[in-house]
Amino acid sequence: MPKNSLIMYLKKLSVMNFKNFTEARLEFSPKFNCFGGNNGAGKTNLLDAIYYLSFCKSFSNPIDSHNIMFGQDMFMIQGVYQGDGHQDELYCGFQRQQRKVFKRNKKEYDRLSDHIGHYPLVMISPNDTQLILGGSEDRRKFLDGVVSQYNHEYLDHLISYNRALQQRNALLKTFAERGGMDADALEIWDEQLIAHGTFIFSERKAFFDAFMPVFRDYYLGLSAGREQVDIIYQSSLNETPLRDQLLQTRQKDLMAQYTTRGIHKDDLEFRIHQVPVKKFGSQGQQKTFIISLKLAQYAFTRKIKGFQPVLLFDDIFDKLDEMRVQELMQMVNHEDFGQVFVTDTHPGRLQQLLENIQAPGCIFSVDQGEITGQKIFTQS
Image 1 (tube, rainbow, N blue to C red):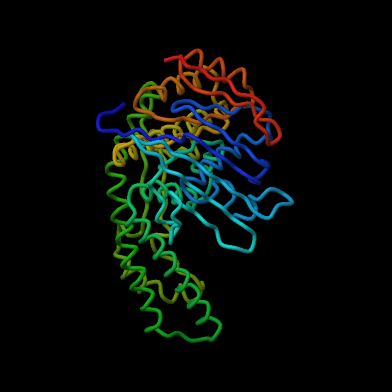
Image 2 (image 1 turned 30 degrees about the vertical axis):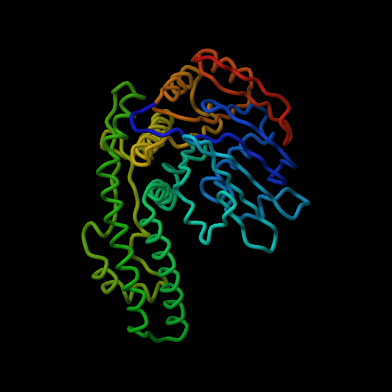
């Protein structure tokens, strides 16, 4: 265990009417926990339930009602986190036509955002290719997700910025429909965007200054030091203060009926040997880039929070051969990493993987929304 690092892991998980699980109760190893089963069996749904406990929402479908089992009216997720000498009980419940309820040790949160960061989590999945191939929104979502887990003030400013942006855009649309503009009314929301946006921009820059050395170290390790990588934080605020931009683009915004400048337009450019990974990186290079990005997120968050986040690997063999997977699992078997969850379509391959790296853990067999078997490994 790293110096000054606390132990925190998910000890128990219970779900009811969640996706394709009528009911399931599981108890986990502090180290490796593997879910094996065919595609569609429900392996990823279990990871999603764990994700809910950290972020109060699904990673795959943000509409809570879509995560209720077909034919049911509600779902429930409960978890017990084991810390150094204490346990925390988490509860997430949602019923159709009602608001979501989230509790920590039986006390309900006034704001769900107050929970973010208490149980940090990093997930690596096949959908992460969107970080490279998708639009700027995917990359901002990643950036905001990393910073929000350790900087709650950042999250508060981000929520306030997005609310002000919605109000400003609605006002611009109203102006366009009426054929006139009220500059004083617009400036009220300009001031909100300037205050929150300037803070967010400053925090994003500070994050990358600290994050980049960590990311480069992981990439060098996974690529055997063969390639140079970089992440360029692209923001119009690098050149011009937001106040000046909003004034300069006011007529353009009025015609477009939305705010064309601001930190909601920021982007990240991923580079390898000074060229975009999106255009020139091979599939293997793109995968290595993403895994390095997520492992760096893990290490960065661990250093700031003082304990290891939970690490989720969905479909671990996607685009990686067995040798690379074993090297990756050997890396996260190190004391710098805490609890790890892994899914794969072949339970036997998962068993061989744990035996090869001599790792303690559990393997759960998943079939059509049911846990049909469990094996426990105690190697150390």
